[in-house]
Amino acid sequence: MATSRELKNKIRSVNNTKKITRTMEMISTAKAVVCQRRIEATQPYGDKLAEILRDLGGSADGLSGSFPLLREVEHPSSEALFIVTANRGLCGGYNSNALKMAEQHIDAQAAKGISVAVYMLGKKGISRFKYLGRDTVESLTQFEDRPTFEEAEAVISPVMESFEKGEIDGLSVVFTHYINAARQKPVLRTLLPISVDEAVDDSSSKGGGGEFILEPSPELILGRLLPLSLKMQFFQALVEAAASEQIARRMAMKNATDNAEEMATKYTQLYNRTRQAAITQEILEVIGGAEVLN
Amino acid sequence: MAGTLRCSVLSPDGEVFDGEVSFVEAHALDGRLGILPGHAPLITALGEGPLRVTLENSEDRKWSVSGGFLEVLANHVSVVAEGLREQE
Image (cartoon, rainbow over all chains, first blue to last red):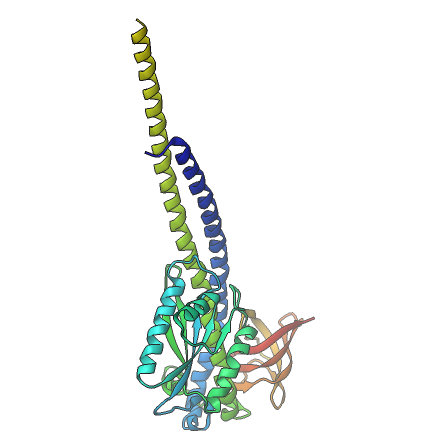
């Protein structure tokens, strides 16, 4: 059995760890609230863009052929994939779940003869792919818990350009989708090619765009709207991923704190028992010694 | 001039303004554009320039906008700006 001194050390170290995990839990809780608020704040913008796109639908019928962003290739040979992971660990399965999904997708595409150019966001994903010996085109670590639209735009714009030029045939992003405060799960979302059904043909729900005055021309508006809505989708993915990361970390740290608490209780009990045993032993020895003297 | 119209100004980071206004002036691609209550449904792309709304108490609020869209539908003006900065 461990000596009381060893047990005392153990209790102290467990309590110290608990302090750290509890602090991290509280920080993540606070950050998660901020991130969730940002998701709500970006929602109306994305919704409005989708709405305008829908309203435009009726007037833009038959135009889809003339936009490079709507270009669809029958036999795609290459695509770009953004993988959104965190810069930091200690967040449970957050990184590994997203990476697992990305790896499966890359392998599935490779089996179909499609080469995938990986744009990795976050240090955790970068080191994982380095360890596995998988190739990445670009590694980005600038996204923390507050991604901005400008940053997102700067990252995705070159990729959109190479899609327009025909260097790649598709663009997807793997990120952890924020469903609600209690549920997040990794998803693979295809950003390019924009599916025409989704973008243009969905005019049935709201009267169509026939009655709108379109200034200066439907082509021009659509030509500007498509890239903006694409950037916005990417930006929203980053914002959602940031919120999911904080929530995942909060959960992980909460579990760690609970476990530490349990361990501390167990060791304290053990410590008291050893102490008790030592005292009993001592008393017995004293009594024994006294009896010998009689 | 009859009544007011609702105006919401959105940036990627969130809603910047939402309220009843009497006049909206924006910078479309091909020139300035003024919108009064009862305007016909319209979708237009915005260029770079000021966006001005006149509130009911005839106070002005201004932003400088670069890119984005403006939609008028059922007396509701929505400005979806790509870049947006508040101006005094």
